[in-house]
Length: 213
Image 1 (cartoon, rainbow, N blue to C red):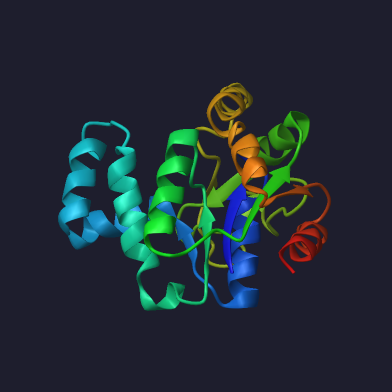
Image 2 (cartoon, one colour; image 1 turned 90 degrees about the vertical axis):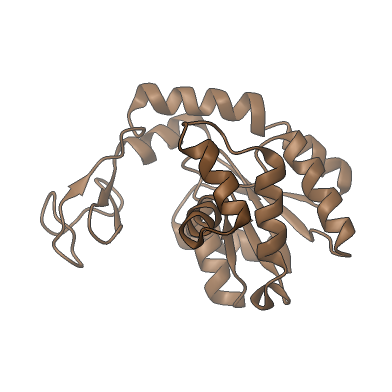
């Protein structure tokens, strides 16, 4: 089972990908994680990627696709994988399709997690993350037992710099311009499935499971 998760910031892609990973025992592939690991490993693609990252520039699509191709070739991806946060543009989607065809593989389902702007702002603006263990909380849906501190390790909770209303609106604008057109791209390929991403995490996951059966 090879899946792509689409959706605006705050749609819950990472959460749903993690739950799919645990249920089906297939890896969750995040381009951010791959980039960081490759830079840490200091391999050829990692060195190339870091030369752009160090200058604060976006890593070129060819380098990112190269990293994904290398990751997909690993043993744990033989039974499938979940692409979380990639592709983000039509160009990336086209390059990914070419790469998959070269490898004799195909994407089975593309799940589009649909959520409106008001819900996204509510989710992200109230979110905080533990500075030590990375645990996530929300002031309404998942508050910590002690305000400002992580339940698990006692670390200090902080809001991400880009989780303020002004920045969230900008991120949504960028998403509509660059990433939303991917829906039409995958709709033409016949593998796009829309999932209503409102309600509890478990309710959303139930809908996701219906789509991947």
